[in-house]
Length: 382
Image 1 (cartoon, rainbow, N blue to C red):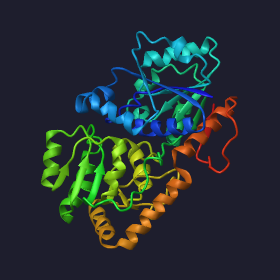
Image 2 (image 1 turned 30 degrees about the horizontal axis):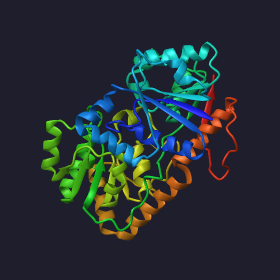
Image 3 (image 1 turned 90 degrees about the vertical axis):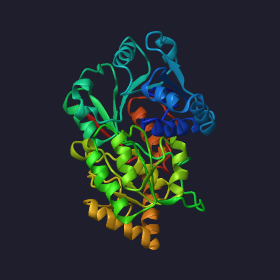
């Protein structure tokens, strides 16, 4: 099969978590013999910030880390859509794609495009900025891939699509895996961005406060940290290490003893069941994880076994203390989380789910891998 993917960026993961998942999906599709063409805007905000932060060397670093994986840049004004879509069997369009191009691709499909066309949503804008999403013209799309059941249901309820499937993110386990024997750099590492005020209070309660109270050796990687955030990290004794390319995160996890998950408020309040991709990635690396409260509404994990849940900052400090002082318990949590990832949440699982959707839409994909469960994919039709 020939896949064409329109994404915000494959090359840049600067404040762009979808690149993590997309790389794993592209890797798996290519490994199965499918042709994959990826297109991204030349002036996308993630790519632009990557170049500003790391220069051309950052792009070279991507190619060195992901040999054989390529992405073509385009300008929406000059993109030859006939050429880009020629011979495609399945086309995926990510929700950060320019709205005019989203509509233009839909019109191409409506005029007789022989491919199947899917819209891929991996963000909370359906609830945080519904007016933006409602303005998208998805009328000619064959359906929506939404990264959570609550999101899938909302697309259907609002009438934005006639068919939708739940397609969670997952870990690229070719990259995210345990690295035993790595030298220890500290107690706790957190890889995440400060953001737009969506979890400022939560970061103080569940990360900065516990680290300060326990006097942990801690390090934070991420971007978009304003001056007051950097000062708060310093007061808590946390080393701020700046942007970290995603392919280097497994080594960071391996050099520390524990990590945390602090979900953004829109996911906690309005989109239950959707974890950040960092949960999948951290568990795939075999590092014990303690999470601030979130509702695993879809039963993706086994809370209390795959990771621990802290109801407040005091509980977070206590659970971190236990994991850091009881190696057997820490090892059990890490082992359980890794088992769940390998059993249910790898990019190989998600490719099987994607191919299942393609078959539902009448695309011949070849023989399914019956050794990989696809029970997570859920379809809704209106």
